[in-house]
Length: 142
Image (cartoon, rainbow, N blue to C red; front, side, top):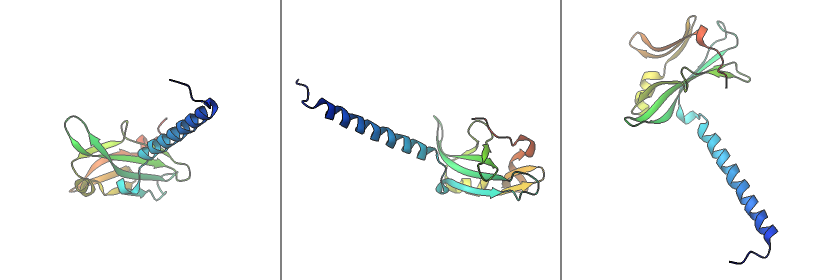
């Protein structure tokens, strides 16, 4: 097989294609990591009276699939501050439940309350489904 006659042009085109592919892959990967409004169940900021900086609780859905269950992973992220927030998540990925469909997740996890003792998420009758005390809410080290 003969080499192309214009090797510099061939190399330039190959590099441009490589850069376009890398850029597209990076954007798609970052977009996949983003939590968008269509995946949100609830978002509520504290009033700033009991805590400084203000805290925001965001309950959202992510696809879930392990060897046994397929459904939605309900996750919690707590934002610390508003301008350039740091965040806290319970556990490694913030997962608080796994459910089969989004409607069930909304029914169980839509209520968020900031109280003097901490964050109360979800309601089951008169009980809180998930509680995070103020003392636990510390910025995660990335």
